[in-house]
Image 1: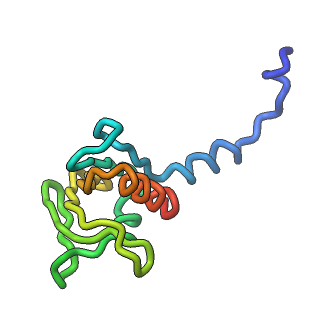
Image 2: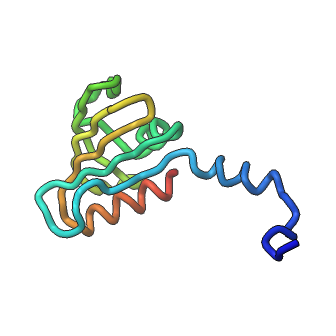
Length: 116
């Protein structure tokens, strides 16, 4: 038996990983400075994350049905990070179109990681 195979199977290890990976965020635009960047948020927990960090520009609650777009602010507590265009591409799948400054993109990715 090789060393890799000698480890005991722990069914809770894989379960823990799946629970933690409820949503995934990816930067879709090229690295560097640009006018606009797009961040894709996918997974079962995507909607819950958006509900925590996004406030629509209108006073109404956002109608995030498939194919819809809403403008608003991404915030970390009371601090606004960026004014974005949020698109719902599927159940739990969102496109966040933000300003292309790499610092802002990094702040949004950190925010998504914190809440996801």
